[in-house]
Image 1 (cartoon, helix red, strand yellow):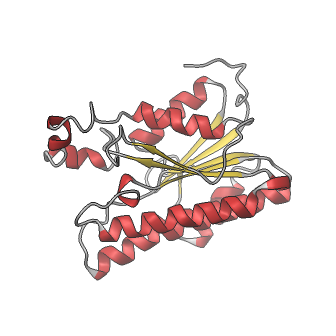
Image 2 (spheres, helix red, strand yellow):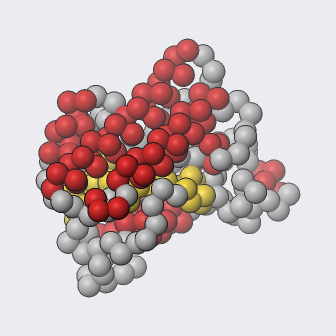
Length: 227
């Protein structure tokens, strides 16, 4: 999985909303390389609700030597009603982007060259019916992340990138897979398999590499489904 001599060894990485399958796989990969991983969620690890300003403040204060921030937090926000739209805005867009911006400011103040990774979705890359509440906010997050990357480029050297997962056999997509919603993509040969948590973990690790020369980009980890 890696070695303790890897470039990321000893660096502090916060996995916000990282208590699920994707976050656990990422934590395992990073810890195998000697990173100091901190997991937060509403139920495990450092308990925090990133939609609340006070929680974001103390959460970042709990990781004073922050090098990397990865925000897994999200909600499927199924439905097109007002409640679903409001919840999606708070959890899929507002909380993550505010946490990212506040983390970037702390990194700048500390003179830290670091990395921020946000999570969008394949539904923000391609058009899927009945995904307005979810996809709209995830698309907004993607766009705002690129703006933040532009604001942080150059001398500050804080890289901001986005991962857009496809149908993953982990996290929020598990329920959809179980319902058979995506079976046709396998049957038609659009994708060869469903994604694994390890596929996402490797993408996160790529963006966290200290010598990485990539910022403001979106990586679709979807087996080609959005093609």
